[in-house]
Image 1 (cartoon, helix red, strand yellow):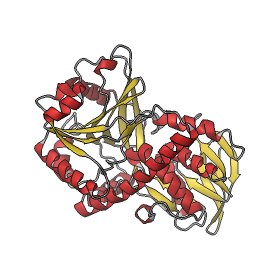
Image 2 (cartoon, rainbow, N blue to C red; image 1 turned 180 degrees about the vertical axis):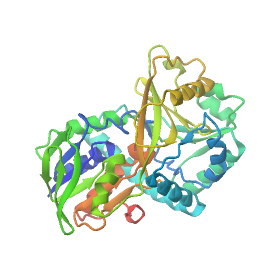
Image 3 (cartoon, rainbow, N blue to C red; image 1 turned 90 degrees about the vertical axis):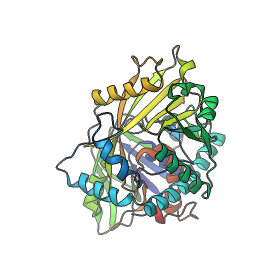
Image 4 (cartoon, one colour; image 1 turned 135 degrees about the horizontal axis):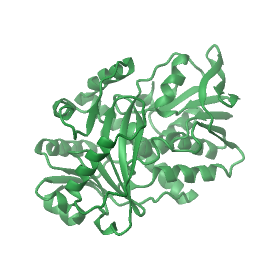
Length: 415
């Protein structure tokens, strides 16, 4: 069997890695000169296996009006004359129901636990290097309503196998002294001791290094896919800037560009880019100021993840268009918010980044066969959880492609 994967982000690379381990011939096509240079490059760095609550949540109806009226809002919505944008937003608001949110959380937890199992297996047996650390995670709350909602979420996830602890403010500061800047604001935190961090880009490069040792793997960098050749419901080749590439099966994992590839096949996924931003600080003389535990400032939706000798700070959701450009105004707002929590951090040399996270309205990725075709598959729409879910998605995709026993129920992720 020969499988051609379109898209060399963390999701596509993980799929190639899993399939190659199964003895399958894999060709990976990536438009950039290297893998994991877009949404996978400088993301938040958290492997949040036990906290996968989707963005679509009933609290959105309360938060959205105040977010839209603030310049420093974690969410920025810029209306466009775009059918895709309004279609996605309509379905997103429909997904902000308690019943939908609960079902999505349950499905995401199942996939994330499979992902954790795969990552740990690869770490143990393959020696992958990506600054991996089990350092725990704190989600800090300073609003009574969000704190009550968090308590209910913890109770809900406990029934699904998550192990989390509720901390009051003093317990928070005792566990993570670096959060002292939130004294007087923080009222509590959700602590998950076994959560992890790592560098998503470095993991993709580490997997690629292993893949390139296999005679059944081929990487085509700097190659753009722009269509398919098919007869009836069977695709024979993907049309690329380097010519036609034939295979037995094709997997679309092209991030936010996946929709343009799939539409001519008769399927338009509910996919839209949610732009996120990050700053990366090198250790220099600041390591004593870095938190040792991965932290999420819930009110501002800011993530602080210590990764190797760096601190990755990620935040914000911009719903606008397909541009990867870094907005200096948003970076300026982020820096001001960081200084409010870590006033002693020197942010002058921090490296800014922006990436487009391909999201579905429900927060669940789409993993499965493309309708109207016999041999095209999709592994798309992981949003901000691509790093967390990539290995589990790779396992599920591999199971379906090889007709193996299914490790995860595919129904919640079906097109």
